[in-house]
Length: 512
Image 1 (cartoon, rainbow, N blue to C red):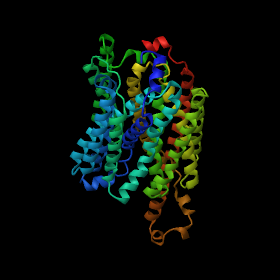
Image 2 (image 1 turned 135 degrees about the vertical axis):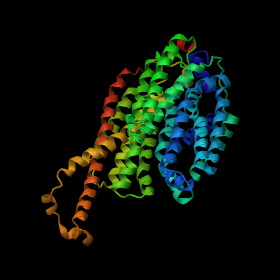
Image 3 (image 1 turned 180 degrees about the vertical axis):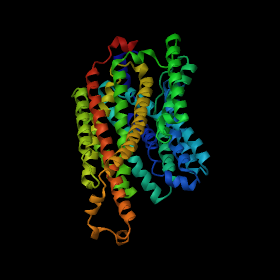
Image 4 (image 1 turned 90 degrees about the vertical axis):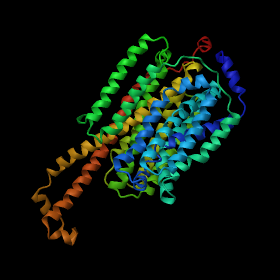
């Protein structure tokens, strides 16, 4: 691909493009599905593996941290060994480690296999995005990103639904075994139909990678463990903070002095990519933070069974699919910035509607607000994924895709940690505020004939019942405050749209 025109010519001659796309999509869905599919199975794993609740959470944390760290060297590995070879190794490794996770007989084995699974799966999403851009013409990039985005966006949304159904109908081990047939099909499709990419002989910056790994790993552990360890009152959290800050300082100094830094300096000079990285960080916050809030809201406050929660949340993925099919056709007709603004408006509108929820929300309301939010996120994700590389040369796509995927994952991790911390703090504050209005005069106004007979003879029983209702109302207000916070996050990210440029690189830049 020596020129912009040459790139288009080569792309038009790629054989078996449909089969390559199918294989890539299966690998993408398989990897992103595992970020959420194991969540609902944790209680079952905990009992089966004789683990404590804290040990069980490492099943999720170990995968996230390993995946985040190993996303970094994806571009170098693809350039050194060829994108096809790296793809085959990661798909095969992810499939094998998924089977090992399903066969684990102790919590130690499970955490070890989840670390290996995260290491193998880290490269799948960025390599899939870079490959989809390479095998399609520039005019088809919008449609290609729409198809790729379906797997990235729908995987986390359908994960809890599929995980709950597999756990209840079969066994928690099938949450991992389901990856085996998908992985085998994806592996064979890539082996026989996927072309290899050009090799690059770029030196590997070991110190730079080590410092970035410490930064990412410490930040992820800080986000995942912060709420459980009471944040900066814990020595563990202070240690993670110190490690991340020190490693960041050393990486910046090292990158300014070395000839070949781990991340190409050209990435940071591309305005579209840098703006998109900040943008996708905010979108990552909304993508999984809402997913983390709605299930406990529906189960704990509204009394929905686990399977019903998954069914009610599934239309959110339907909205995303519809949006991506529409935006794939509009990507070449409308400015990407217009599509992103429309998606932001839909997302903000859905979150605003959610701030009006109460202790009982009709299922229809939960469905249409979820569909509207999924629809809006679909309109944001596809054009943003396209415009992020509009001014980036093809040689930097794999590296840009790795950083793009990492920024989205970091946003999701930060989003979940922040909303859970705010939720916990607001519940305590709201409970203290509401109990100020629980007085003997107010309790005297209760309709005693509505109370259970056993409580009538006990003053402490009446207070216990009143406290339960106060706790329920305090929790409801805390959830609504989180929905409002996320609405403001969406509105705060909106001005970034005007920093994006639609201009593609000149043929001379592509040749370089």
